[in-house]
Length: 58
Image (cartoon, rainbow, N blue to C red):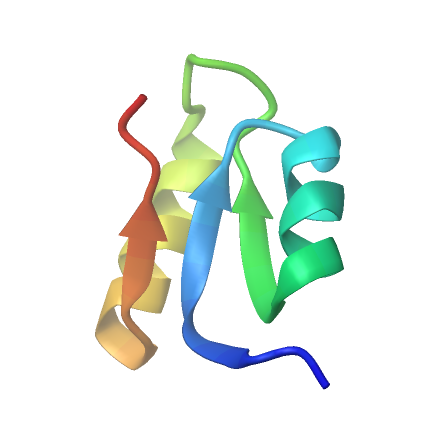
């Protein structure tokens, strides 16, 4: 059984989501590139109010 991550992980794209889900049970938000649009930013802000998020800063 994979470990469950309660936080939401912010990733760049679907390949990142796929890799994360191979090793842990976690939800992700995909930014679809390095420029974060307003809708994605609003999702991240909402998540911050409801659940913590993990942002990959690479």
